[in-house]
Amino acid sequence: MDRFDLSSSLLIKIAVVIAVFTSLLLTACAGSSGSLRIADSIEHPPPTYIELLEFVGPELTETDNLRAPVDVDFDLNGNLFICDLGNSRVIKLDEMYNLVKEVGGISVGIEKLISPIAIASGNGLTMYIADSQRRRLVRYDRDLNYVDYFAQYNDGSGSPVNIGQPQNLYIAQTGEIYISEADKNRILILDALFNYQSEVGGFGYGIGEVSSPQGLAKNESDKLLVADSDNGRIVVYNELGQFMGEFGTEHLRNPIGIAIDQWGYIYVSDSVLGSIAVFSSDGQFLLDSAEYGVALDQPTGIAFSPDDKLYVADRGSNRIAILKPIRQN
Image (tube, rainbow, N blue to C red; front, side):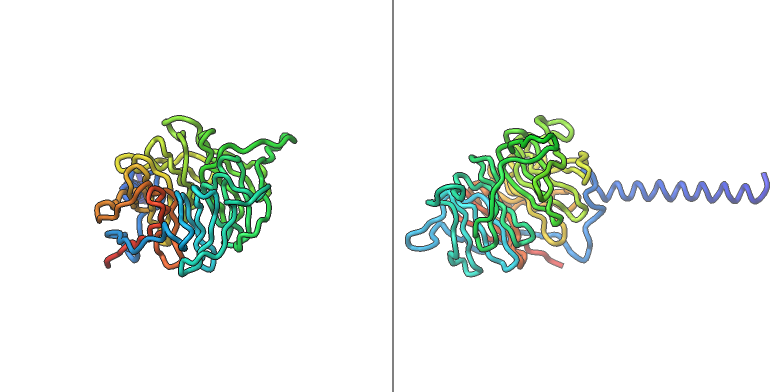
């Protein structure tokens, strides 16, 4: 073998060793969750504990109380929206928690809400509300003026198809609508004009299957996170709807809500454990709010405010809990 061939062979072997080492390193960083992200940035340390700041409710005014709140969200101005299920309404509170407006409740006709179970903001301008019992989504503007509703979608066959029983919503920045349907054990994905795009899930505990899916979120890598409630885990799909992994089985019993902070850390409410579990961006367990004396009663929907506080619909106590993740450099 001449010198050139020997050198080439040696270089190839070195390249192979480097590639194998890099692959092993990335695998170790990714963990067992399906590699949602390579690793958390050291510039943004994880939360070390969670502090309970205050509660909103049950009393809003002398004559008005929250009753079984189940979901929360914010508009671009920081106004708080609450699905007040027990009162069959959605309310808007300003930054001082003063009641600004409500919809549903005693309203009649197409605007009437029977079971508003989830709310999601469409880029902060449009509010989508899942009216579970009536199996429809209702749209309002951010001032809670009624826009329209839909209970059917176009699957391309020419005949409209009824949506299932919605449990939660996620509105992508590009307008796609993600609906978790408990009765069909799937996540239905529609475009902004309510045309069928795809679906993920299917009843079961196997790979990619879900049972009574609840909360939805997307991370910065465009992966879809689903609270697989009855199976006590978070299931992850990529942008093509392919199963990527799962996490949380050792720390969750009945996950309901999912929220992701600006640094990629994942927060999950558990209505049975009465706590908020925190995971890294790749699904590694970090802490549980119960470890720090944060006692909740059937926490359901959760959302971050513009100032990085975590708002929790605490259904059993008829209140909204306001938490603050604390980070230590």
